[in-house]
Length: 120
Image (tube, rainbow, N blue to C red; front, side):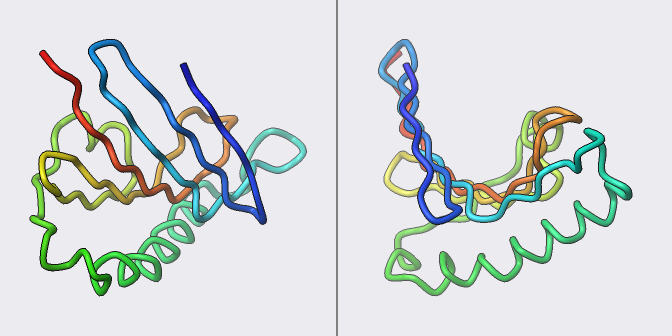
């Protein structure tokens, strides 16, 4: 089940998975593909996304959460899914901030997601 909304250019999704896992995601930067369905220079768009992520990371790293965040290692799945990513753990949850393009005809986005694992 997924619930989503968009307000003032920020998209958000709440997803519940089997086993009780929950993910709350926010797209804080979005660059749509052009009318032809392609970017003129996808590497330049990825670079713009990386710059947007770098500008956003201080919002997390200098927040009141800082003392509770533990930097987490990237998994192989993260490396395949994200152009650039940074992860932390927070009381058994995973906080992820990264640049992603889930399909060639979908936008490049900077997303921030908080995921709570379900029960085994």
